[in-house]
Length: 132
Image (cartoon, rainbow, N blue to C red; front, side):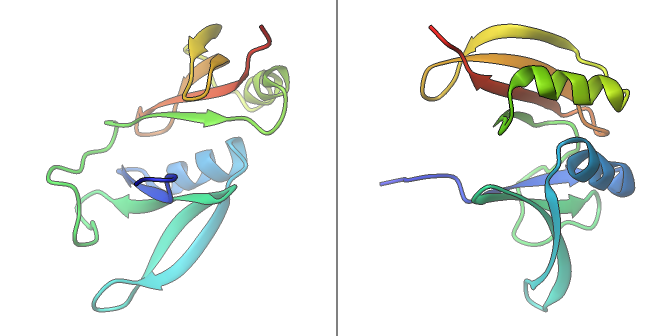
């Protein structure tokens, strides 16, 4: 019945820092679009065939999660480049790695991952498929 994830919503208390992290650090594209009733300008981070819609704490769009809070997400992204390149980029940008690289199990098999935090302290896992 379900084929894939289209988008998810991230609630932030630190809009500018959040935009910088997801665009400059992770390389996602910032998109502005008109949505909702009444129509208002919204923002999202696009990557691959998915996106992350952005809500500002206290100014969420309806309908929303029952209790939207910053820092409640634990997200895993598959990298489009080798994980060692990701690690170098994070180090260059001064983004601390919380853990890793470590071996984990992803949706389709073994993965090699590093963990970091975004400005709202969401846990971000960046991974590559692991060779057996």
